[in-house]
Image 1 (cartoon, rainbow, N blue to C red):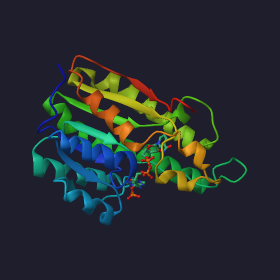
Image 2 (image 1 turned 30 degrees about the horizontal axis):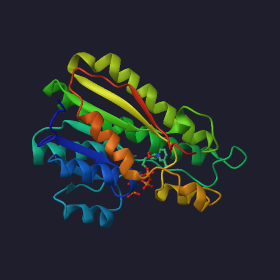
Image 3 (image 1 turned 120 degrees about the vertical axis):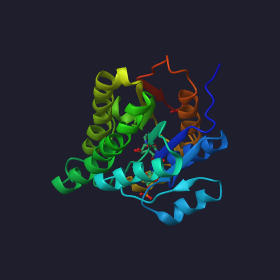
Image 4 (image 1 turned 135 degrees about the horizontal axis):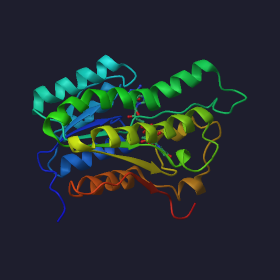
Length: 236
Ligand SMILES: NC(=O)c1ccc[n+]([C@@H]2O[C@H](COP(=O)([O-])OP(=O)(O)OC[C@H]3O[C@@H](n4cnc5c(N)ncnc54)[C@H](OP(=O)(O)O)[C@@H]3O)[C@@H](O)[C@H]2O)c1
């Protein structure tokens, strides 16, 4: 029997577009109380029409992630689920072009932000003795590709964060899952150094596929733990 998500409180960081946006919409459709966050307030505002609360914030700012958790607690009284869908990449991703400044930015957005958001929600989850955290990582974390050293290292780092939580927070009823999607037709692809061919894009995942996967994971009973899940396009 799938767990009902009605009235569960869900924070989605990186909810202004792509997978995060579709995840926020899907959880809201299931009756969850959703708090959506990202930097672009105008994009988040569109979600308000679907009954989703918004809190614009930069995930690379630990205090801003703390304020996001506090705003959620004030509004909804608890935090059941965190989905960290924030991510970015850069055209100058090859080692011949990467700089320490770009590396730091990439690790900051893709990995530090996940830690800051996690740190902000853990106290409430510990108190509840329950909570689920989903990190949107990437196929690049498990299969070598050309997405760049900084992106691959940061995405693989999410597995380390997730594993540590498993060990340290299991007895508090907190579960984590690293979700590794393959190529998905979203705005992040505009940051590739070379445009993705239309025939490849036609075979890519859609952001709602990833949202459906996260939703189905969240519906598993608390006795189940899925450490990592891979979702790849079947035809690429
Ligand atoms: N598309 C793919 O092929 C693919 C494959 C595997 C994994 N992924 C991963 O999937 C996740 C979702 O990406 P997407 O494909 O849906 O692309 P997307 O549409 O570009 O979404 C990226 C999200 O991250 C947010 N973000 C970026 N920097 C941020 C910051 N400093 N603070 C807060 N939010 C920030 C963006 O919002 P703002 O700009 O408004 O802040 C946006 O909501 C990412 O982690 C990405 O790495 C994507």
